[in-house]
Figure (tube, one colour):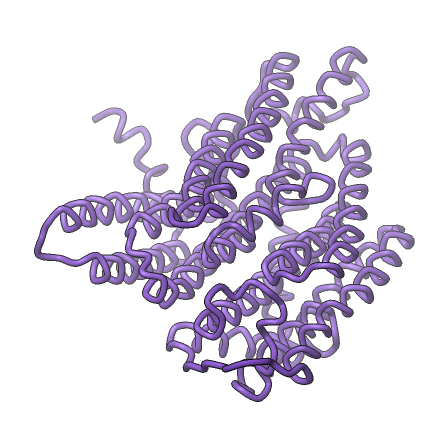
Length: 496
């Protein structure tokens, strides 16, 4: 009873996470009981579990926005709730809802009747909600590992495909190596400082000139190890090698989930660790981030030029977008923070729309592997073709679409911070990326397909998602102030 009364306010503050964890466990029991009963069929079960998961995420979102605890440190400094964490949590939940909605028709078409797929997405979402609130090395590492364990199984969830098995195994080996690097960095910092809490690290690093050299060098090495591990999970170059293979081998809905949601959580954790805990050492860490930003933009733009498979092309495109996000991160200013948050929101909408189009065309090509599978889409389904064209134009940064404003604010923040050459390279790589985006539009409207073409309507769920993403990308130009004001307030609350 004393334990409950001691943490009563803490449990109330994390009620959205508690509700989602409880709902996930209930759905797991529900699926196990019904799957072992002869009265129910698996197609019915996967549909029920999917919609119940969507409702659970929706209720968790409502609980999040109505949570009265806006600034709190919980469970003996293990978790932190602030506007930055709440913003990312809301975005993660909404993107997870879209990922499940996009996968409903795919699961039906491919006879993918394992209800555990949805349970794993829910568990990984719970871990990511905890990750963005992590305020200690222990809570940070446990959240990362819970997320990673779910992702290993999700990548290999298509048991009939050897490519999916390869993707899961490759992701398991390389991601476990990155987790080991993170853990080694945490142990180095703890061994030299005796601290695992982010808030105490801020106090320790304040006035870091007084730290002895043999301690400061070891601490910097620990920060470097943690940064490398997080950059690996963020698919930032030169730690991106696993991403194209894992993205291609995984089932397409899993690839869409990997490309959107984990990046938000890892970015949130990375920002809190470097800009909050290690801000006094930002001059040292800044060079690492700038190098990764530069490498990601160049590799993402140049490597995508030669890709013939759609998911590999989107993987390298995602690496390029991470480079732009890291550019805003490297600024370390309020404007850089605002531009980073703005880019994360717009990137999420663009990626959701792109994968929704790819999933909508699964019936046209049995595998939808190659860029050539978009051939004659402009004549077969003009609405989908126009939607994909607007999404690609936004990814390329063509005005007046939302992607243009995302890159504009990123480049503006870099220029205001004095990184003129980095902003120039960002503009050049953005121009190069236009080539492979426009190549898809050329294939959609001007290439001719040999043989028969099978067409089918887009299901209701993906139609709604495509309509929402297209509306946001096209009309953000007219009313940008709500999102700009929100991101500016969060940046002020975080950086000041």
